[in-house]
Image (cartoon, rainbow, N blue to C red; front, side):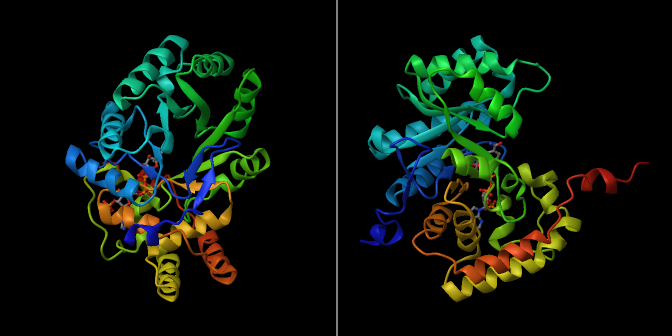
Length: 332
Ligand SMILES: NC(=O)c1ccc[n+]([C@@H]2O[C@H](COP(=O)([O-])OP(=O)(O)OC[C@H]3O[C@@H](n4cnc5c(N)ncnc54)[C@H](OP(=O)(O)O)[C@@H]3O)[C@@H](O)[C@H]2O)c1
C-alpha cells in the first residue's frame, strides 16, 4: 500500500517514439564507483532494490562509471530483485575513446556481459570523440550495426551539440536515435537553447543528468556549510564558494516553495525540470535508499505556474563561472 502511494501507474512516459514505458524519474548509477564512493555491492543493491520497489524502471549507467563496476552492480542487483527484463529500460554509454568500430563492438559486448543481459535497451556515445578524430559517420554506422544485430535496441547521444547530432542522424540508414542525454538542472540550463527544443520537435527523450546539481539543489549545503568533498565534487565549479554564494536566493526560494507543497527541496528541483518540458526525464543519482524515496516523491504533483515562474526567474540570474578555479588560483 505504501509503495502505491509513491508511484502511480500514470507516472510514466514513453521512451522517445517507442512503446517502451519509462518512469518519469529515472535513476543514475554513477554513484556506484570510486568517483562517488558507493563501492560496496550491498549498498548499491539496496538503492536499486528500493528504486524498483517504488516503480522506477529507467536506469542509466556507463562504461566509465567505476570502469564497469556500475554496470555490473546494476545488472546483478536488477536480477536479484526478480524484476522482469521487459519491465526495465537501461541506458549505457560508450567512452568517446572507444568509438572506432572494433572497440565499439568489443566494449558493448563487455557492457552486455557485465550487465548480465542479452541486449541493452539504449547505447550512446558518452560524449563526442575529441583527440581521436573518429569520423561521425563511421561510429554512427558501427552503432547502428549493433541494433541490426540485436545487441542494442535503440541509440542515443550524450553531450552532443546539435550539429553533431544531425550529422550522426544523417549517417544512419535503418534506425534513429531516441534519447539525448544532457546536463540539465536549475543552475545549468544550456540544454534549453537547442537540445530540448530539438528533442521536443523530434519526440526524443531528454535524460537530464546532474538534475539536482550534484546535491547543490537539495538545500543541505550552504555557503556556511560547504564541506571539503573527497569525491568527484572536489573541484566542481558549482561548489566553489564564489559560485555557491550566488545560488543562495534560489535555494532559499526552493525551500520556501517546498514548504508550501510539503515537499523537500530536491523534489521541487526535480519537479521544476519535468514541468519545463515533457521530454525531460531526470536521472538523479542516489547513495541511500532514502534519497531514492525522495526522487519518487518528486512525481505525482505539479508546481503551480507562478511557483515555476518564480524559480525560473531566480535561476536565470545565476551565472556559474566554470573558469573559477583557474582565474582565482594563486600562482607562486
Ligand atoms: N552523460 C554524462 O556525461 C553524465 C554526467 C554526469 C552524470 N550522469 C548521469 O546522471 C546521474 C546523476 O547525475 P550526478 O550523479 O552527476 O548528480 P545528481 O543526481 O545531480 O546528484 C547526485 C548526488 O546528490 C546527493 N543527493 C541525491 N539525492 C539526495 C537527496 N534526496 N537529498 C540530499 N542529497 C541528495 C547525493 O550526494 P551526497 O549525498 O553525497 O550529497 C548524490 O550522489 C549519474 O548517476 C549518471 O548516471 C551523466
